[in-house]
Amino acid sequence: MPNHYYKNHAGVRKMKSGVFSFAFVACSFLALVSVSGCSESEKSIEISDAWVRAVPPVSTTTAAYLTLTNRTDTEVVLLGAQVDFASDVELHDMSMNAEGMRSMKHIESLPLAPGESVTLAPGGIHVMLFGLTDVPAEGETVSVCLRFAEAPPHCEMFPVLREAP
Ligand SMILES: [Cu+2]
Image 1 (cartoon, rainbow, N blue to C red):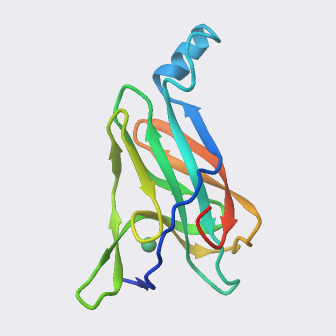
Image 2: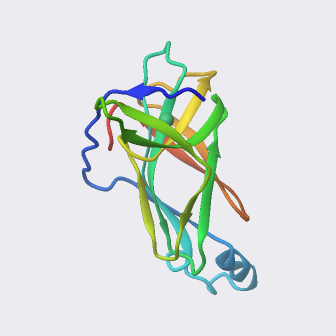
């Protein structure tokens, strides 16, 4: 796919916004055995600082950002995401070229070791949304379903914002 370029954007980190987490593999199984058998805070994938960038209505692309923390005992691998308002979704990493322009490349998967946390933010790794069929408006929330290896997709509501929360 062709390289495309973004203006340099300072990803200013502020206070944590909503923190979501969901039970994962081992916990889901234990939860079937006993409701209190597994604390979600101990064995889960945690999602925080989730947002989708608000773009002009004529735009055909935007991006989703979040912080993922693996609180399970096993490696989890993020493969990408799915949304109902874009035809294609890819994990991208952004880097600086010799001219000081930022270029993006497709990454196939993003592994997280137990306890590891990764932040997808402007200027770095992001979830690229191509072929927008319905451009999300600022202030809306949209469903983004994260895809993992060896686990069902997990859908979360992401706020649509102009800047990082
Ligand atoms: Cu991208």
